[in-house]
Length: 175
Image (cartoon, rainbow, N blue to C red):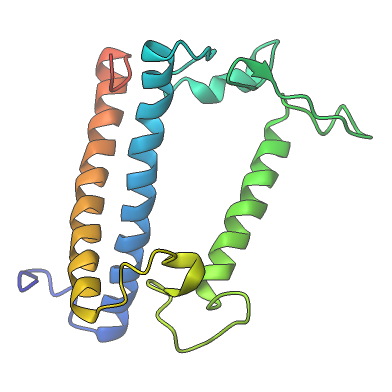
């Protein structure tokens, strides 16, 4: 909290942007670290069939004859345009992800469904973002914010370890 040798927090606006960026990356890293582990664990211990349970090989499924499979089942997209909309088309998957992620991010940035400005975009609270009411007490909320960023930083380092391990050994984090 007090260590800033490069002066990155000198400008309050820039500091706020860096804080927001770090927290968003931390949340994605926590989700990503879990998402890298779950398919491997399910295939090893629950015998759930995956074409490629390793996180770094999963994207290559789109180029196989079967296309993308989830839990051993082919994704069947019945469409009026089967040559365009199918489970082997990277553009379709990319557009789907952009729409879903863009919608979620727009929802967060604009303050929710009604566009309530003034709320903290990083911690909007409410029934959708804190359904169990963990952060109702301000002291507890401050403690949870610190825990979130610490766990997020750990997850970012874990993801870096996953990347290096995949490059060096060609194996996933569970193997």
